[in-house]
Length: 213
Image (tube, rainbow, N blue to C red; front, side, top):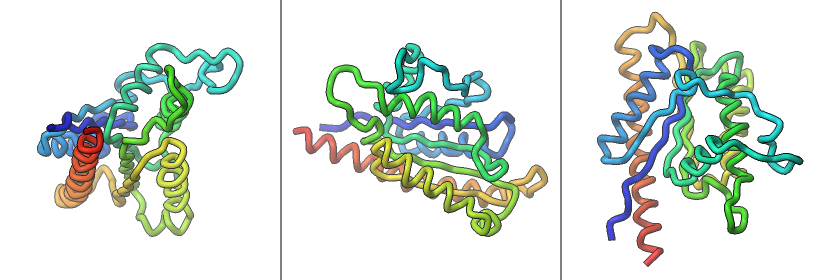
């Protein structure tokens, strides 16, 4: 039996539609399609996503009642094989927009449960984070930023959400005046990671299909 196509979702968190982050998201989208996988991009800024957590959206608190749109987003992510977060590093951290998405959507996904026992929502989902910065990776590492992001995404979020595998790529030296050659080199790094993730996700799809029969 041939399993369904791999489903991927890109979450872009940059206010400039012409940013290099937007180019990264577009490059990943093209690469996933080249592997014959379904992939869509969600631009949080352009879609007007509200990053502010509401009082009724706090799991485990009195009056917990997440809106239908939030529940639908949680359900969609649960059915996704690959989630790709693309964002810039500002002041040593992701944009507040992405933090709000993590709180409102992924935070609620851990609590939302229709009928059965509580399960980790992204137990079949690979989590990819691609970040950019104008400064160097070595400087960020010296300041503890790299290790902090590793702890947050690769360890904490991956464990809480049940992610089977986390991937991380940081592209440094990304400035408005960088050369086309530099941009091409960085996008090739995106291609290489996309190829690996697409292959891993496809193999996992086949493994689940075989184990279900």
